[in-house]
Length: 245
Image (cartoon, rainbow, N blue to C red; front, side, top):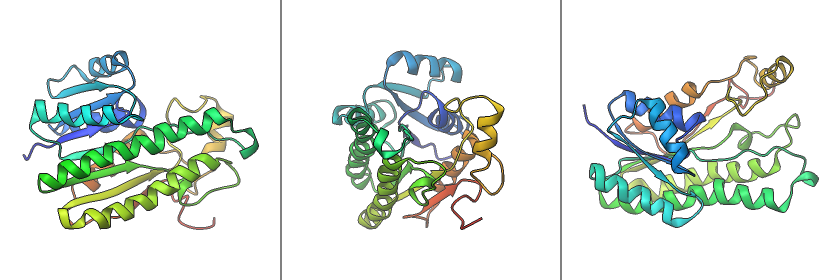
């Protein structure tokens, strides 16, 4: 097997943890980021403290953290083959209820947290003859719904969907594939664990079901295993963005 080295941001919980776990299960190396060393240590312990998992704590919204991720990948495993830009926050409110702090937080994590690692990946992978960049966006960025007012996620995640296409074109000649996974409603601890909330969330997809973190991880694995797919935003949302229903 061709062992790859994968950088995953937001790797200590939720989707990022599931993505890191999936790559490790296939024998790949993972360099994971979270805001604190304690969160990474807890994630590593839950994963069984594998030798091919390296944690890099730090705020993904600052350039130094992205640089550290690639430096650690090179130091421990020689290079980085895959970047999964997963770190993100979701704040759903009506526009009048958003605070200035909400705006700053979502720009720092969702926008800067994409740009700085992607910039490092473009430089590193171009020099090394290729690679894959996958960003976790949101199906709301493709098809907003009045049922969930969420202007800031739509603004940033929708922009990341377009940025995925633009960067795919820019890096195509360097053999760097750039894609995105756009999840719908995923069953994670982010949502209140009560029947009424789950019934409402299930109603946001025509399948009447919630996705799982493993569904998203499988989509990421698919995209990073492809040779001829780039510039794609892959919806994992139970058909929510397929059309009117």
